[in-house]
Length: 213
Image (cartoon, rainbow, N blue to C red; front, side):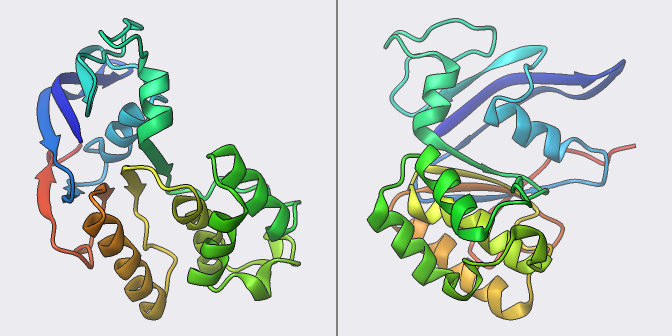
């Protein structure tokens, strides 16, 4: 699904990690662990394409090579196009426009990610969003906003989910419900890399990137 080779990333004068290599297979969940400041969010943002690494390569399934120096792959794909086809990113912040109604924000985000009307309807049903759709996003609770942000992952399926503390604002009921969604994604051949402090609600191997500072 994704292979990372000799990845090095620094922030300012501090090296967060150097020569980091790992792969994630289809159907696999990986729990990204490490102390605060170890670079978990930075790694996820690097894989999502928001940060250019100092060195290393990221290969998505089916590509000959994908680097983050702007090189094209042997298939003619750049890192940006590879990520656009393969990756969903859900950050610690929900990334929602608070002045929009939930319906408008869901429609914008889901269609931007490639969803159609059926996919949006499925996301509304699975995440019980119908009662929230006419409310402004600013009026939703933190847990409701997280469900709304999660909806595009359901509405527009992509193989790899990069998640940063996905369950932080959710109560026990919705942690369990999103755990079922994650398991369904894995059962269909998807993969998940999630930065967490608590165990994921699905079987997952750990990737520990250090103690932080």
